[in-house]
Every structure is written in structure tokens, then in C-alpha cells.
Image 1 (cartoon, rainbow, N blue to C red):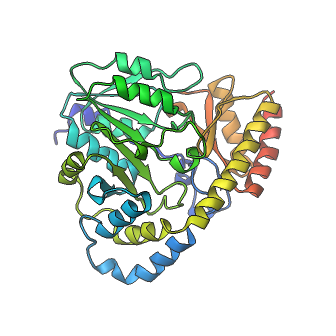
Image 2 (tube, rainbow, N blue to C red):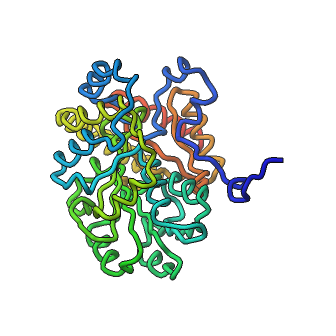
Image 3 (spheres, one colour):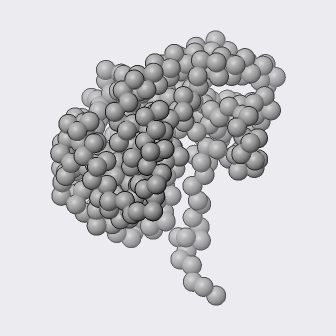
Length: 366
């Protein structure tokens, strides 16, 4: 019998928001409106799509191992030193590289009790000791409690801001206080997957504005740039730490088409403006609607909100009835939030129609 380590035997693989899509054909899924995966409802940046079309013949050639063109484009776009930037196949890949580079088996990684599942999976598959700290009653990060959990074995504190799946945001003052108090030998990983949306709020602590020696900031082009299928993520941090991440990084990621798409997307300001404006309108519609229906929800600062219902059965019934009417939403049992759902904003038309459906579903649940 082939040996399988115990931590792999007990590992639960990552499950995406699109579980419905695994059970039906692609054509069937295209007929649904997916509000479960936090994707950009406007699709991808047109400049990115064109770049892929113009680069198809390049797929016979290995991409640059250091993704130099993309790294330089990111550095120019954010006015940062390219030596302080690394890219990978989405945030998941970057998280794995951080955990591999800066922790050993059995060492501690601290995070929230309900946050991005990719962080959990990467910690467990590497056999790191994962410490989960409960969220506050309003579903926001409890940074003070996280500080109290730090031990001599703690190597990393992972913070998703805004948090997925709750949508709640750590404010600038909260983050700066936390960075003042966290030990200098503990690496803080700030995952800003939704920074484009959250950056509209004055009290958002943009990670790229900080240069702490123990801070690495993660970002992705899956959300606002609409490149979820291309898988492009990147990180910014001290040059010394980025150098170590290059030692564990897979050499040819992102793939060559993804790199070309990402470079082009960074230059598509019009698309980002349209994306953020569409999200602002329709996220506000969702919040207003659920408030009017007396349904508790978070004040999401990304492109989604979390809805809290009376029980797990109600949450699953809400998801099933929504699906029957053409809308996919995300039950959050896998996050430990059994009675909750995550719902992302859509286009104007999608959101308006979804609200009609949700109104009927809530009436049925009553």
C-alpha cells in the first residue's frame, strides 16, 4: 500500500463557489446567473481578451520564468520596485509560496475562524499548525485576539482584507495598531484580493502604502480585472523576502497567455472604472433590499455581502430556491457559517432580477 501522510488523508480539498457548475453541463451553467464566485459580471477587460488573441501562437514557447514583462508592468502601474514583486497563478499559488518559504512543518499560522479557504488548504497540505481565531459578533476580524494567540512557534498571521466570505474590512487605524504590536519576527500576510473595490473607502489601509519588513501584500487579477480563468496573482514585499519566494515558486507561472492578458488589463483604466461603478450601484441595491426585508447582512466592502438566515436549513433552502429561478448563491457551511450565504453583485439587470427572485424566496421561507 502506498504511504499517505496523515495530514493529507484528513485534508479537505478547496471547494470553489461554483459547486453547481460541477453537477451540470457547461451549456446548462451558462444559462444561470452566477452570484456565488465573486467574479466580474462584466466579463474580462477587453484589452486582456485582445492580448490573448494576439498571443495564441506563443503557447509553443515557455514563458519567462520570472514573468519579467508582467512584473515590470505591475511595478510601473503601482510605482514600486520590480525587485519587490513576484507573480503566480492566482492568490492560491502566492499563498502557497509564502507558506513554503517562511514556515516549517508544525509551525503556526494564525488566521480568522472564517476566512479564505485557500489559506486553510495551503496550511494543512503543508502540515502547518493552523490556529483559527473567532470573528467578532459583527463578523469582522478580531485583531486583538489574534495578537494574544501569537506564540514562539507562530511564523505567519494571515489577514484577508476585506475578508472573504464576510466582506468586512479591517480599518486603517486597526491595521496600523496591529502592525505596531505584532512581533517583528512574525510575518503578516495581507491578502487584498478585493482592493479595487475596498479602495473606494477612506479608511481602507492600502497595503501598498506600507513598507514594513514583516509585511507581504497579496493581490489578484481574478476579481476586478475579470481574469479569474487566467489565474494571475502577485505579491509586494521586502526584496529579501521576495527573493526567498522565488526559490520555492514554480518556474513558469503564470502561463504565457495569462501574463499577456494581465499586462494588457493593467492598462485598461476605463474597464476598472466601469467595474467599480457597476459594483457600487448594485451592492448598494442588495444591501437596501435585504435591510427592507428584515434580513441581517454584513456591510460588505468588496463586491459581495454575507446574508445571515435563521438556520442552516433556511440558508440551503434559499440557495436551492434561488437556483431553481436561475441564480447561484454560495452557502457558507464549509466556512463554518452554516446559516449564512454569500451573494456577489451583478450587472444592473442581473441584480434587479435577482432581487425579484430573492423577494419571493424570502416570502416562501416565511
